[in-house]
Image 1: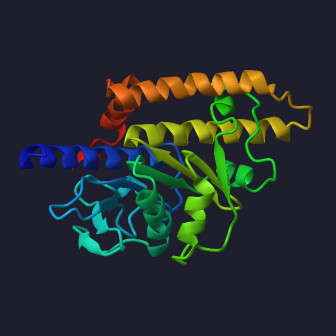
Image 2: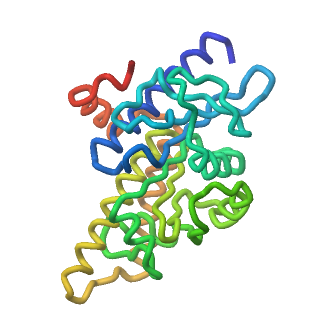
Length: 256
C-alpha cells in the first residue's frame, strides 16, 4: 500500500474508532474508564501487527482520533500520545481475538446492565423478537475466570469464540467482532436493545412468546445477508453515516 494511502487508511480508522467510543458513551453503554474497543491497523513496515486502543484513564466521551494508543501483539506500546498506557485486562481479551481472527477489524467489549444480566442467566439471549432473532444460534459463550489479567485465558477465549462474531462472557458482559468498526458498533447496539427487551419482557411476570426455530433462523439469515453484502461490496453504509451525523451534532470533537 502506498504511503499516502496507508496514512489515509489509518486516519480514517482512527476517526471511526473514536466515533465508536463516543457512540457507546452517548448510548450509556460505557463503564467508567473500563472496557475497550480495539481496531486492527494495517501491518507495520516489517509486518508487525499493530492495534489501536483507548488510553487508560480516559472516559469514552474523552477519546479522540489523535489520543488513541498504538500497541503491538505483545501489548507493548508503540505510540502513546496521551501518555497513560493501556489497561492490561483490556489487552488480554482483545489481543486474543485479533491474533486469532484476522477477519475482525474491530473488537468491542461492554459491561452494560442489560448485557451483564443476560450473560448471567443459563439460557442467555432468547429469540423473543426481531432484534434478538438476529443473534439466534450465533452467540458463543465463555465462562468467567475473574478479571482478565491471565494471558493463558486467551487460548480459551479464542476456542470458545470459534468463528462467531458475538460472544456472551458469562457473568461479565458482551464481546462483539466486526469486519469494520461500523459493523461492530451496530452489532453492539442491536445486542444491547435485544438484552434490554428480554429483561423487560421477562420482568413483566407473564409468559414470553419464544420465536420458533424456523422463523428465528430465517430472520438471522436475513440480517446476515445484509451484513455480508456490506462487507463484500464495501458500499456506503447509511446507518453508520447517520450515526456520524449524530456525533457531528453532539460530540464533534471525536475527530480531533
